[in-house]
Length: 79
Image (tube, rainbow, N blue to C red; front, side, top):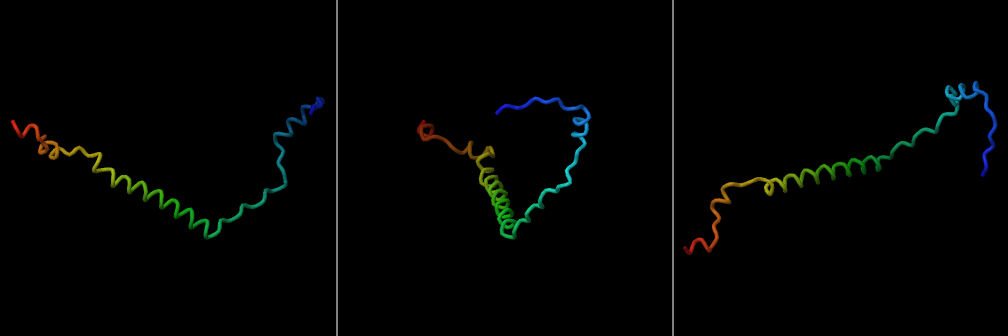
């Protein structure tokens, strides 16, 4: 695959930057109702999973001071 090197006039290069095609791209296909519902369901699932993990994870992340003071080991009771 060899390219031929031919001289191109400068005017042609200058016009190439301004060239607009008169061929329009085909219109985008519209999403069906099932696809839209699926996207909403996926988004709702992701948001609810994040909210659920936050609700379930908050007690583990909170530093509870009262439980640390009341817990004592059995070895310290015998003294």
